[in-house]
Length: 108
Image 1: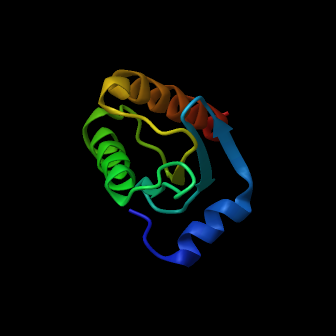
Image 2 (image 1 turned 90 degrees about the horizontal axis):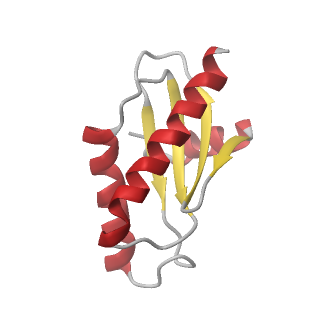
Image 3 (image 1 turned 90 degrees about the vertical axis):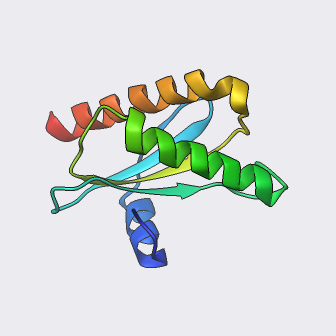
């Protein structure tokens, strides 16, 4: 899990990203054997803290249980469009597609 500002800044400054309907995922290869993920949900996307926290919880849960890739990279998932409970399957599918693309770019 990415927590410190410097860790987020290093991923953003690497300037590699993939976009989808709901997200922009910034990524950077790392030297560890573990994939580290951080989440950014801006006030511009969801005005209420309850909504932002919900989106972070959903993303954390998808990454913990539903993500079928294991990258040696740091990733920051930046939400660009608000999603709700009905969008869960689409959100999960988008993240799987994005992380498959990242894995292909890092391996080849």
